[in-house]
Amino acid sequence: MSSLGELYQDVILEHNRAPRNYRAMEDADRLAEGRNPLCGDQLTVWLKLDGDVISDVTFQGSGCAISKASASLMTAAVKGKTRSEVERLFERFHQLVTGTLAPDKARESIGKLVVFSGISEFPVRVKCASLSWHALKAALDAPAADAASLAAVSTE
Figure 1: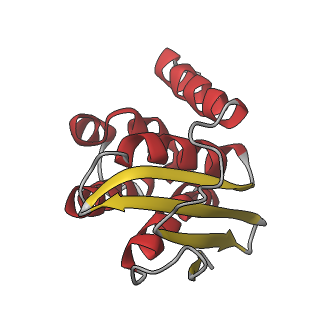
Figure 2: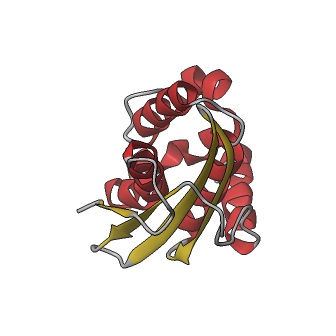
């Protein structure tokens, strides 16, 4: 394995072992549940919005190292960003993991998320890496309501 590949693997394993923002959020504005029936990964994403800006985002759930690390890195990447910035980041991330965006072209716009560039070589794992992102998008698209209103998404 190349040293870059090892670095990427280390980042993913570290975020799996100690996920950032891993907690339920009592005062969330929105939440969504994501489920990947192919492998059993499932998670919930909570959002707190300040106008158009994500002021806090958390997640909890169970799944493989790829899905948990992706959710952890996603929460760190989107906190403090506007809805439109998050939507652009979602598109870039999706392009990266599906192999339509080269890692060297993605690095500047998605930062640490580039560690998932190797996922495109394993199509089954793309859904693991993108599950939390689809849940985040579902939460953003859900009507503003109390946190009891659950949006759900599946990566079938």
